[in-house]
Length: 287
Ligand SMILES: [Zn+2]
Image (tube, rainbow, N blue to C red):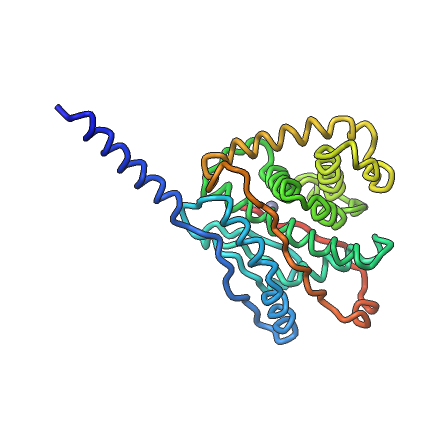
């Protein structure tokens, strides 16, 4: 018969093995993949700005991973972002930044707000793709549309990090872009851009309704939706907390601020004036 001590020692050894397996991976920023010389210098500026590294550092302080997930700036020939499940790699298209900057151009009265919104939108999209990666490697159960769920995850991380304005930056890239939608858009795995806009504004409002009347007044959040947003945010916060609780590095309070530096702008101001204003495309094909 096994002694109690032996049983306990065996259990502890098993637990240690399991927790080691769970904690054997990291988010890693890897070198940009760029072919054209036109994008190379901007890719280098983006990479050396430290934005990816700041987000990665913050994520690695939060969660244990069973495997590495790489994060890479990539030349894609389109404005997009992906999570490649086979490669376990988040790919942020360099062209996405220019597209986001173009969409945000003129939405804010002050230029500095526009720069803040661009940084927020980029980090928000990165966290959306990170969400796909977490769903994959942690086998997180999702019902409903994964695209909506990882929009929630991105917003929740930012809001709980004290960076709700970054969520508004992300929302602004989806503002007013549903003219001419058709069957392909309705059938798409993503919600329509306007729905993603109002979702994000709603979650920020719901996280601090007493102090965010501006989201109703100037961000056009309808009163009828606004009334539900506190409950909606509380539910998504509880859900993501529970879904990720078993993977937390620690359950004690910690400084979760991401503090990403500003994104370098893709153009000089002269070049920016010459930009046409293409419709934004946010059809990131999450796995
Ligand atoms: Zn996605």
